[in-house]
Image 1 (cartoon, helix red, strand yellow):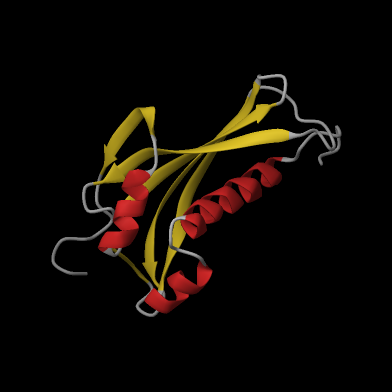
Image 2: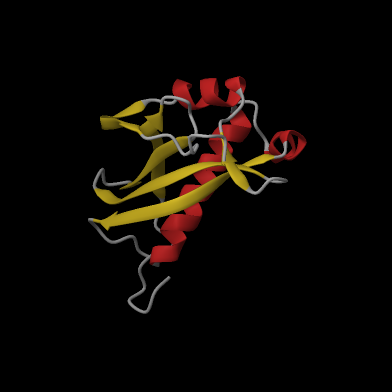
Length: 139
């Protein structure tokens, strides 16, 4: 909570990351699968929009949708929306990321099964095709 007894801004980011990882885990990519494949999601930008307050211990519902994807899957934008139980939207978090090769420490194209998992996610109304994160020339 922040000084005004509302959900603090970093809590929205933390919960967004939790929901993303719960989605991957429920769709065949729990943490041990990312570790086995030596790849992980890396977030390069978060944008938070606030609409209504969330009070201490107030129950919320958090949704997840795909807001953007590169054709090769190397870059993605996922959107979480936070809804109060009275039906009012409290916030929106849009997170842009890519896939990090944990050994090479560079952005890579995800495995086909991970790309299919991403594509299975519902899309936002303003879904966009993103540029690839892969530099031409191999590096």
